Length: 384
Image (tube, rainbow, N blue to C red; front, side):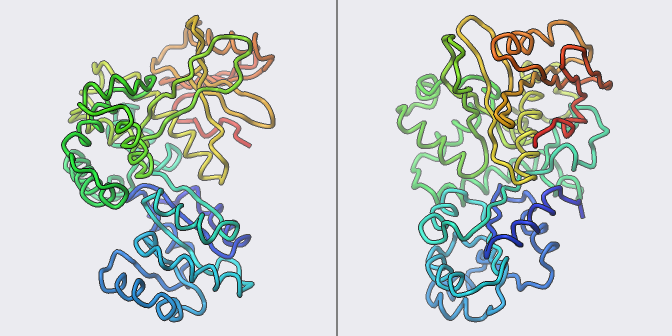
């Protein structure tokens, strides 16, 4: 079993809250992490039709079977349980009594916000971070192509077959739970078009034209994809420093293996000359830093910055009131151009530090406060 960095955070949350909610993509390792952390708790999978029927028809009787608490997996499938859980938690002083898990973020959070707000600690568990990956020593193309889903690192799955079935399962199950989308062909087309826009500014009108639906529908479908942990929108930094700044978000996938599959990439070698290789490398690093934050129980607090004059920084991390710049470069040789964005940011913001993450091997600490890190050492970025 792959040891997860979020293990200690999960234990800490369970010592502070009466219930803990663990959410993330399907097959990201939620159940494995929870069951290995709370070995003494009963485990109940609400994907099981018989169990789900019992829980929905008699929520009080169902929960009454677990007076010491339990792990309730895919609990969003039975929204009736949340109101009954509220009463049980309010009448108990036990911390970490129930551990709730779900892969549909919209339905999951909707149930919690309506009934369990203030009673639950949150942990977002994404696929394996670079620091958790068994193939971290491999070249970046292998890491991008394979992605971070634990099953691909612990079993001999056909990567292309895995991701094609992942998308099919996601569309046929999770999408229909969130929203009644009649044109699944157009929806799948949107997913593939988004893969071709990894690391780029989101243009809703352009997507609407290519998919053949209106902008409102595109926005709604993107929200569905975000709720299912397929992709996310990285927002622009909110301080403008007296400059005209770009206000559109950038588009990233939670897993580069999934994005690569959607782009029709069938091998790691194919990435070497692929026109989107730099975008996928950027996606890898941005999402890895997001994973590092979630694994520590921290809020994202991540942005990008770009003005209308062409100045930009790939990533801005908010830490202790400071806005730390991170530049991401897919090349293997450090050049002066790597520091252009950060140098400009330091000039207008007064920040004296920053990071460059690149595809090389050596770490450097420059006199201008910039630390250069190989992609395999992203975890060294100070996130506290």
